[in-house]
Length: 68
Picture 1 (spheres, one colour):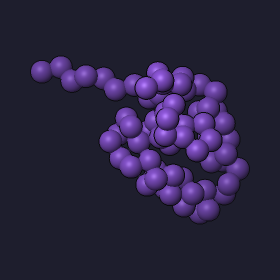
Picture 2 (cartoon, helix red, strand yellow):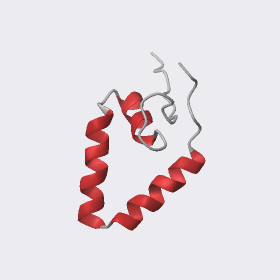
Picture 3 (cartoon, one colour):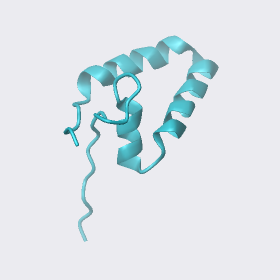
Picture 4 (tube, helix red, strand yellow):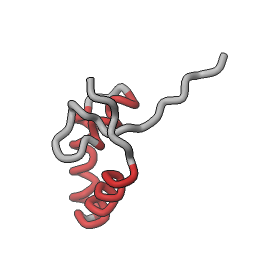
């Protein structure tokens, strides 16, 4: 009955810059390209600076996943 808890890791093989969107895609079973497009759209609507700051913070605090 207990569900397996999924942890967020930066992707080590599906990354463009730091692997954060790839890691979110792996964790949620969503194509990382769709995650990246969503980040770009949100960045264009709100402003680029908050998304960039959130990405840099994620890069610092999210551990990198194991090499496959």
